[in-house]
Length: 339
Image (cartoon, rainbow, N blue to C red; front, top):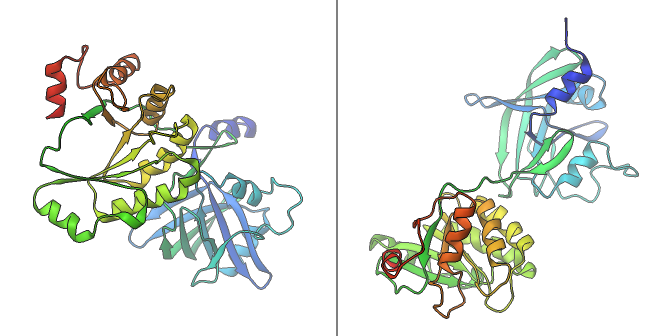
């Protein structure tokens, strides 16, 4: 006996998915709707599918137009998802006030989407009360690197990073070891030249670039743009450093690291926190929860403003995250870390 629709809907609600806006265009103008029933089908040829309810105007319009586009939404675009799902009352034109580009096929896509696909309808199959449209991808782009928007159990959300398996530390009081080319940049305008980075790599140095004052809420866009520029420059490690003057808030640490952890890949993301901030260990926990496993530390009592090593190790033990040392650090331990 078939499962009842209420139970079926509740079960499917436990499956998390990304969110996209499906758009098409025809004689009647542009039309769009939010969908989570998207899937990749084939790599060669590039095919994707989207399922639309037969009762929806989009289903008929898309079938008539023979083309559609998909804009994948980022974690900060739930309002767009709600708008195109018809959940924001009083909006007669869903496209108004948003930044759109028209694809070669003539379909609108969001300029600030995480990614978009331009498709022509290759097949349309009946699927119960839905139609399964298979589209051949003719154009694709990645306008913005940011964590995706998720939909789960009728709620909008975002990716939650698990705690790392281990934490790695580096003592900032240790002198340069001759195997690192390390520099600090406030923004994109004071980066080393590509030639300097290439020369460092040829010499066998590990290139480590830090963004200073990385958790200033007024600098969020510039900080993330600088992180992306450091990755494009070829840095092996990219660090986000807290200001010694303005304490970082856990909320801002989370906002920066959620996106920085995506932007730096495949480079290593480091964090340098200020130990005198009363929320230093909270910020360290937030960093771990956002994919950071590499921290800059200082020896306790060293007199500088960094995050004390034994405080970080105590936190990692409480969280059952393995650290480089399993007991209170000795001078020999610190000497080993500095190496």
